[in-house]
Image 1 (cartoon, one colour):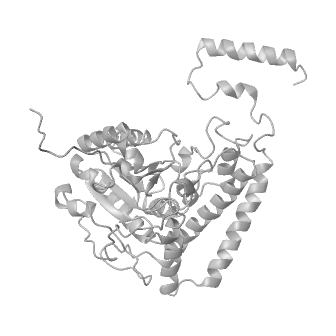
Image 2 (tube, rainbow, N blue to C red; image 1 turned 30 degrees about the vertical axis):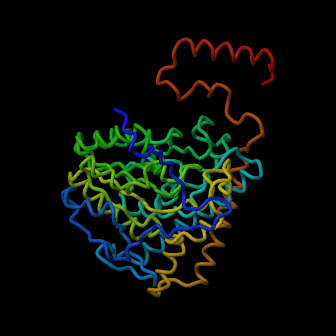
Image 3 (cartoon, one colour; image 1 turned 60 degrees about the horizontal axis):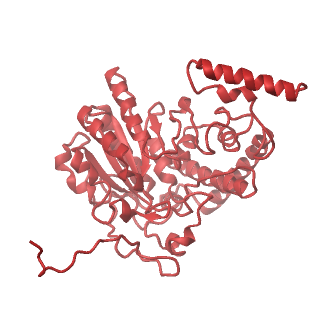
Length: 421
């Protein structure tokens, strides 16, 4: 029977707090004080830590002090290295963003405001743990010591590019630095990470896997597949969901962020879930270290939601002023990760403004010098940088007969048209 006495149903369409031309509003965000969130044992049952999926792990307070049970008590030397790696990541981003605007490369993606998500995590893990990143974790490679010129060669797709121009700029692949090749199809790296972790466990190894994705791509089917396999086999994996509020131009509500936290998705799969301040480098370090210990001692996987903010556009192809308030970045309540770690070091007497300014200048000079060296290998628009035959290389382990035939035909045609080459 039709119930005519009921009001008509309505479809809910998520809307961000502010659109272009409106005043930025983050009043809906409830921030717990630093140091308030409890820290369970790393082997605690997921059923006994559900509250941690709805809280917010914070270590640095408003005075720049490290407080509470999650304080990792890092030495000043480690803190300074983390600060330098984050500052280097930002200097690198700025230089490569400028290079794209100058037409030297086709594409770039910055991680402005999210540097702690990768850099602090890299410092918390073992150097041989395997990372399965998305396209905004360049800080992992910088923190692990990958030469900047290798990154730039890949961005320029020049003759120094070890991937031979086969990947979109910033889609790096450096297995020797524990950095699995980036996939532009989001969340495909999560099942790959679980498979790698399962293989590591089945061999009796000690290495774990860590994967990163944005909050928007948790709505992909690959996310569910990865969670299911990780749960069933207790794969030693850390899932990092980077909730930077925007999936390209769609705000987090379209991925389910209005209904609950993204860390709460762990509850349905029976795995540990942590929601942390992603702009607090010490919170990122502490949570990653906790999850790594849990994975390495057969406690199973952990999902970490990094609550952060994408201060720049999604990529150089994006104009964020078309979909969000221009004031949002400045009004983000959790601040800037570099500024916060800098303030902490100054507060404990291990840093000062002059040293910070000198470091920024040194890093900018270093990145500029490396850029000049990389550009000697070629930039966009300077012709074919890789030998023609590399088109057929590194795709199949054994090249199929029809591709061998095509390669021979195209080489013969090339020699006919340009015999001197």
